Length: 110
Length: 112
Image (tube, rainbow over all chains, first blue to last red; front, top):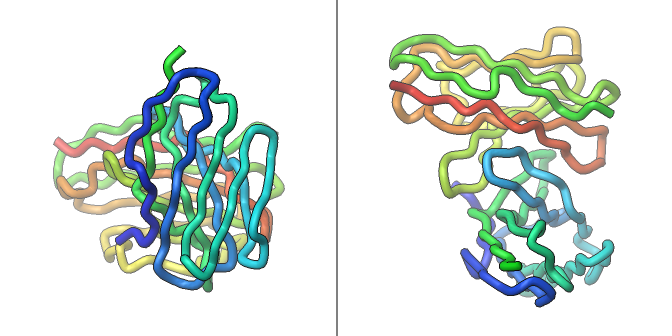
């Protein structure tokens, strides 16, 4: 069973707006990662934040991690139609396996 | 970097048949992972290899499932006596130690 959960489960926004997605988890982690998946395709790694980090940026992406609340958020700024995809948070705890949430479907309308 | 390659992309088979999937990782990656993803869910870990050694297996990996990575390069995942519940997307990923995992586009298995 999955131990991560994204919120909201679906989000529809207009191009140019920002999109924020949240992830909660239940166990202690070494790092938390965000992946994107286009329909029928594999997952693409977006960003990794380690448990001793609080915030990280990569291009239009900003991720935060609050280990006391066991939560993370991913912000996509100035969204584009090409950002339409499913987004997953995943974490690594005591092993190399990734534990994924159920995902969040983002639709960016042109 | 040609990416992680999986074959076939789609497999349709009758219940009770055996199926085998192949994964070719990124060439210099020493770690290889298998995940299963059902519709509307995130991927679930099945197993992973470091070189040719299978280091971790999920309890999801029943005795009908077996994975190999004989020379530490490509890997195969075999499912024996397939059941309806095996219908899913099977994803392979590879990585260098301590680095993010790179995923292939998966093999979609449909059981009739």
